[in-house]
Image (cartoon, rainbow, N blue to C red):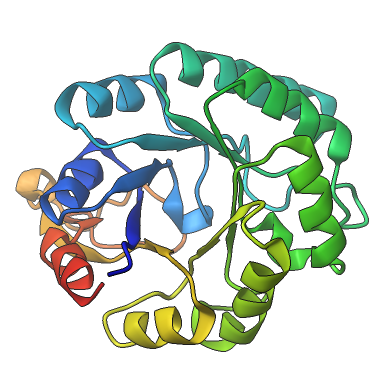
Length: 246
């Protein structure tokens, strides 16, 4: 019987605990999931390591909006990576591109070297690269362990054929982790059509914090103005249902 690895994309310690409740195998810890995930705080990582036994991959992404960073932003990424590793990160998730959308091999090598024996994951920056085969070969040569991908499509439903092609192309030299839009409705189909042995899932439900209810006209965020009494947390029951499907 094939064993499947279930990774959950988390944006907080509470998310990590819910993922563990749902029998996840590991998590990817971020901040600011609305913008695709940015570097989490050191306090978030320290607390997650204390309260959870799950392996924790930590995002290293200094800002939203692409993956070609200024020198100052890249220095920030390196400093964050050092601190994350120092405080127990089991792996780093990152991606560096040149302005033309090709792999920034120099920066990728530097961060891979910094991570050492810890797991090295190249994130969905690969989904905007024109030559994904060439990129995979470069990442294999650099020593990257895993690639997170939607198959260069908006989600895994449309990207399944390319995900399968990636898995076949890699021939086990690098892990291919499908993510973006994995759900109870499609996870069995995804596994069957791609031959993958791991999936990356994010599913949230709203929790309530009534501390702001006395003045509902006050907002602390941007123009979206979400209700201040609600916040999203990973749905542990949904994760458990995905686990049962796998």
